[in-house]
Length: 160
Image (cartoon, rainbow, N blue to C red; front, side):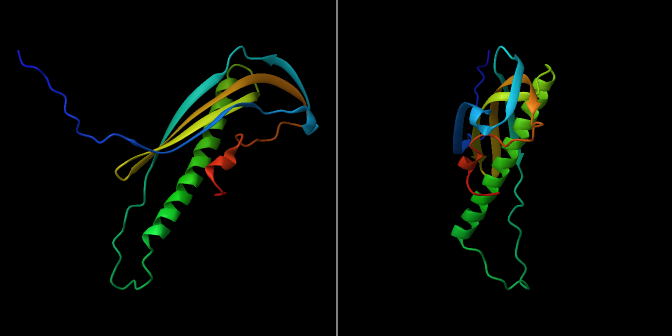
């Protein structure tokens, strides 16, 4: 009988960035919104969403292009800005998906929301993992529920 040995062929994913926002209320009395809660879910709903980012790759510069070559610091700054922008998009998408999930149970708002965003890298590949949680509720009142941003999204940086 032959023993099987497992070889690690791939390098592990490296954690590049990690941000967490604990569950916080999304409606406050002092906002002036008249909201009546008709029904509240018994537990939080959680969703995990993974996004693979595809880099444009380093394209070879032609000899005819005599423009300035970006420095390593400029490249890092551009990559950081793109990661912040992609993190924001991933977070907004995760919130929309969680709202769609609670809508299946006849809830229309999230009374509490929280999230965890992790940016992972393996070689040239980048992955964003978002864990979004919220407590669904059926609410009615004024004003009509306008789209909201995830709480404390500014933690991801100043990219818009």
